[in-house]
Amino acid sequence: MQQWYKPDIVYRFYTYHCINTALQLENLPLKSIALESDKEKKVKDYSEICPVITLVWMVDDAFGFKDDYVA
Image (cartoon, rainbow, N blue to C red):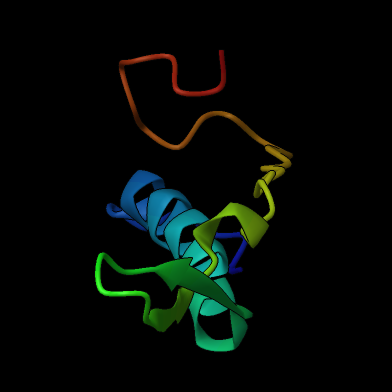
């Protein structure tokens, strides 16, 4: 990500974090669930989603914000 000031920098951090989670949805394995009439249905296994950790390295925290986003 760019290292210069942009007014939407905090929103971009959240966006990149969410995209990392959403991209996992494309390749989720399927699991079988039992239906009431002795049939099975294949559904995505959402328990296989890995936690996403986003590291934000703030080289210079003087981006013109009054709120302390670094803390």
